[in-house]
Structure formats: structure tokens, C-alpha cells
Image 1 (cartoon, rainbow, N blue to C red):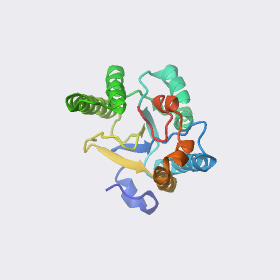
Image 2: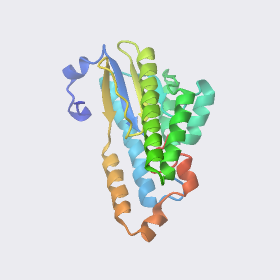
Image 3: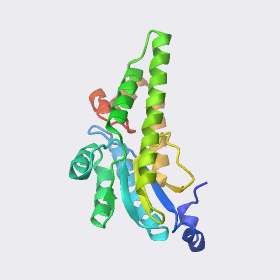
Image 4: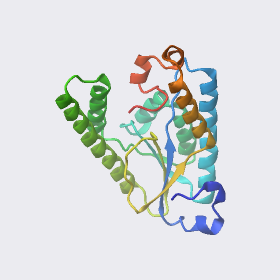
Length: 228
């Protein structure tokens, strides 16, 4: 179990300094027509992420590598794409890049495209159970291969004693090897957002519909939760 940051004593934190460390930040998105209530929670979440990440760096190790799902291009090209996709996570990464951290793309472009295509088909719905099973199997296989590629790239780039931060959707299925010490950044605002989403789902359809992003925005990855 990942130790709680606020209760981590210095001697215990010291044991991780010579290990490969990966800080996980879960991606939360907003959308232009989001209610103010949600936007406030969204902004608070990212402020708390920045604070908790800084706390991890102070106690365990400064970030050396920056990783972000859905970005396949290196350098400025990848960062420009990220700035449009997720300004909140980009700001955190940009601050650390200025401090010397290196942005390293971990996605395989074809694997990402394949996973996205299968997911689009799943969201479309089916009349045939046979087709549904085929698409579901294809999505599971593509997603597994995609996350294996992401983990492989991280383990290849991180060296002993270094730390990286990975921005990834909360519902990811990546399996990390024992050589990586995993620390999840989970500020209190995340629970508030989960609660808000559950409350919206419980509302009558005509009421909840007003608080949802447009379908076009959802397809572009600007829904409440990231859709790669």
C-alpha cells in the first residue's frame, strides 16, 4: 500500500531515495459549459495536485522525467499538443521542465490509435452479440499492449534514484513492476469530484443533461474524465 504523504516520516522516506520512483497524477478534465460548481472543484483539484506533488519531491525526490498519456510526439511538438489537450497538467509539467526535468513521450502512436478506434466502436453500441464480443476483445488486447508499452518506456528511461511523474487517467489498467515505487497523488478534491459526478448521474435525465459536455467535446477528450 502506498504510504500516505502527510504521515510519511523522514526515515521511512529516506528508504526510497535510491529507488526508481513514479508519482501518479490522475487526469481530470473540464469543458467550456461546465457548471461553476464543477469548475471550482476542478481548479481546486489541480492546485492540490501541485501542492502534493511538491511535497513528494521535497520528501522523496525531485522529478527527473515527465510522462503523459495520449502524447506521442517528443519535444516542443508534444508539449504544444499537451497544452491544448490538458492545460492544467501542462502547467505542472512546464514548471518542472524549467527546473530541469525532461519530457519523455511514452505512447506508441499506432497502439494509441488502435485503442482509440476500438473504444469508439464500443461507445457506438451493437445489435449483434458476436460483433460486441469481437470489439470488446480487440479493445482489451489493444489497451493491454498500449499500457505495457507505456510501462516499458518508463522503466527504460528512469534510472536508480530518479523520480518521474506520470499523468494518466484514473481508470488505467497499467501494471507496474516491483522495480518502481509507486506514489499516487490523490488530493481531497478528487473525492469531491467523484461525489459530484455521482450526484449528477442520479439526477433526472432532463436536469443532468444541462450539466454534461457536448458530444463533440467528449470525443475530443474534454469530458469529465479523460478518454484517450
